[in-house]
Length: 152
Ligand code: RB5
Image (tube, rainbow, N blue to C red):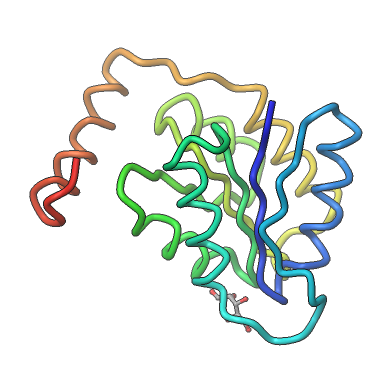
C-alpha cells in the first residue's frame, strides 16, 4: 500500500523515523518533503501537498507532521474530502480510523517520541472504518463542507 508523508522542520526528524518504519513494514512511501531538515519552512505547504495527493487518489492514506501536529492538520483538513486526525496515542489513532474514517494521520514531532509515534502509526493502519452509525456521522461532516465550501 502507498502512503504519502509530509512534514515541516518541526516534524522532519519524526518523518524520517516514520518513513523508515513504514518501508520496513513493506509500505510504499511517497515523501512530499520537507527535505531540508531543520531549515524553517511553512507547515501549510506540506499539509496541503499530502492532502491534495490523497484527495486526488495518489494514495489512500497520508501522514503529516509538524511541531505540534496542529497547524499541519488544520491545513490538510481544508482540502475538500479530507479528514486529518491529530493523534497523540494509539487509542486515538484506532478511533480515527474506526469511527472517523480519517485518511490522514497527523502527529507532533515535538509532542510524541519516536517509539510512541511508531505505535500510533501501527494502530492507525491496523484499524478499519466500522461504517454504520459512523458513516452517517462522517456524512454529516461532508455536509458541513458542502454547505459552507460549495464542494462535494
Ligand atoms: C513551527 O515552529 C511550528 O509552528 C509548526 O511546526 C507547528 O507546530 C504548527 O502548528
